[in-house]
Length: 455
Image (cartoon, rainbow, N blue to C red; front, side, top):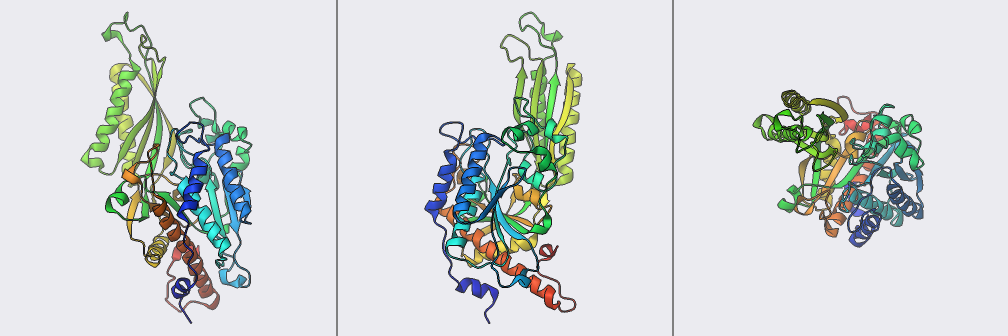
């Protein structure tokens, strides 16, 4: 009797079609509110159009498709009948990513993982690839924090990590609340709060994503296996001074909110460059100045601060120190400072057993890989709280992301999709093996190879 790996290697191994994947990415890229670049913000009609396109594609493959109350779109191919005892009631093995973007973005961030999931679904269906567990293909809603400040909203709803207060406290630049935005595209935010995903319906989730950094590209390595995802603390700092005429107000009598805000920006950069905070990244990504007149001293400035780290304690300590030093600046300048927490997510260590399966899939597909840490947040980081989750990186040319110039080659996308499909199949097989061990009884003292899969 052949081993599981031998059976997988001996079976037909259809390869991903690079042109199909790139064609899917191009189709999504045309769904944008800005010409020549991608703008598809969270919970907008443009984002929902992309989800409808994904749903139609999956329905055409014969999959069952539905949208959950948070706007995440899910397509399912049931496991093969005939051996219901093999998977012992275990849940689906999933893959996918998100379809929203930051303003004026590129075409690969998030969408690459959805396109790879679509290609895997096609291969499974058209080549009748056997699998015992259901396969689920997911397009998450609202992963980017560009509109509301908090990232991974769709997956946070799915993981039961959203609160009623956030439906009103999270607002975009036009003061539209998260709840209002969801209602405007036909979603029920209260239902989304009360309908998280059931952990019992899932066994594992694997997300393919572009690296958004330059490590794979510089090393000429095709795949990254993510071991750790950085945490992120996001704040809105509001500095309030006094607006007045630029010519009539002496310098010594000014309470200029913008000069104080500028000092805070430099404080954040200085702290992140300090050797004591090696690994910390601090960024002020938004600066809204009021009243915004050339001849009026700025009276109020709102700053968007993002502090990231792979160490949870250092992440929070760095944030607290920036705020403390910002208050000191404001006190010296006669300014007021208000601090609002938009989001706070801890770093996530991804399960070793699932990372090992991806590495094994890379070896099966003869694809070089290396282990990487992710500085960016991902939906898998969030759903890892309710199911074992993992991330496969493919290269980003020159390490660029969140800009129109971001690029990943069709060949790298296809290789990544091949590794993704091999991973889905190997996870399915390993879960079957564990279920059979449960059914017949494990030898005394023998630990299962993938403990995370057994909960």
